[in-house]
Image (cartoon, rainbow over all chains, first blue to last red; front, side, top):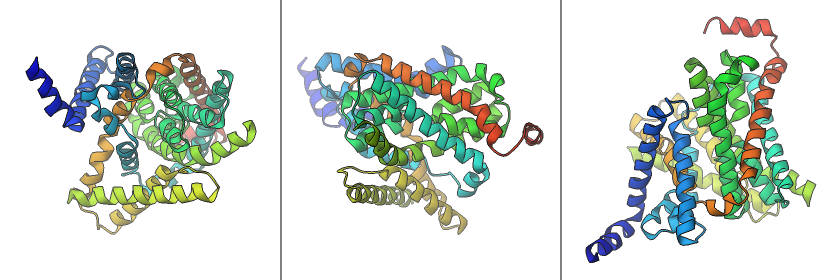
Length: 257
Length: 130
């Protein structure tokens, strides 16, 4: 028992970021296996992994009574650093790499229109639902609205506005519901909304914005459409992160306060 | 070298955060406004310039691409360190907000396809070469 104790102290806790890489890596791997064999690829591995992350956070909170999910378990504290604002923002900015200016221009007016409409409608609906459920301050409404945009816009907006951790978690959960739903439902809805050509895929990606949802949903509909949808979706998160804590927050604050 | 890419990425983020913080200060908010979004735009513009003039080497690109490829695991770690326990008490809000937003966006796809300046025949024509 003594050996286990000092192994935990001198290995897992001392090198907690490395422990986090290992634990998250195994979690992601298992999720992709589940995605491939249990759902036959219908639910994207990334969505399952994030869901598992939320479940882990739930048990972490139950075990420790803390507010940082599984990161409150001493050996897993590195997960808090790995998923903290610093590395998160660095990785998110990196996803903009590879997006070309001229590809965006080619998307044309309808692409830009779909991006703006998609972001505004998601924020609007999310903020209204937040209001209906009793979250009536501008910061919480904007953060939950941001979550209805994507599970990345949510925490980035919430982080910038200083939202509380439970509102951040709700916001991530709303984005996750959206992402999973888009993956599952898209192949069934596609024929009804004319989602069968590159142009509508571009518009679809701009409206939905959730990259994993759009990529998963389009892959299940027609793999040829994936890059078109994913391209506009890539801009969604950046634009959402830009508009959320600024313009949209100011408008929501103006209305409710 | 890979570190050049990572440094470029880091510099974009730092500048974005600084501009976002100044923007927040300028409008009287003690907050960062759009810093991450500004950093993304900056990275797109810079990489576009560097790639066109051929001044970005593949190892440099890998220094950025690594961080881009690790963003899902980082989001998983982020999800795992949220206060889900507290969120579950209001769980319906996430389901309702997520579902309604998906329904609204699905409904908008045909509408924007129509008002995007092309009529259905053009869409058909665009569809055939692919």
